[in-house]
Image (tube, rainbow, N blue to C red; front, side, top):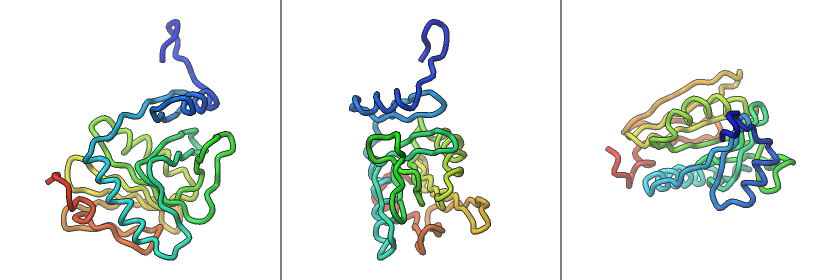
Length: 191
């Protein structure tokens, strides 16, 4: 937001106050507040398919799968965001300055791209998410084609990326599970 020719930088407290009084979700990064656009029916269905598959894979593991209502705070970058889905294994570590559930320790995050978010999801968010010590997997679900891109942290702390297209699958490092591309896109009109 520009005021008097200068860019206004919001504090995290100002962001939280806005978020608590707004019916629209917002993300926060580097003093800027960004309103999140509402997702399409296709976007919502793809996110639901990933969360369904993930929930089925959890089994007896001490993990909980969350919708986009769980805010994630990235301590290293100061980003506050509402990914399309998340999984937290073990006890949820709450970000103290946030009055509502805001996790510091996701194990798995998923974003379904859109025309307006694709570049952000695959660059800025990827780089920010990779600084979360507990994160093992970040899945990007394409809105353009049947494609899953999985970024996983290896045991030595490095990140590897795998891409799967129709007929393929990706193996999660956060659970003993695989996500099948055709299962995620099973009711999708995306070719």
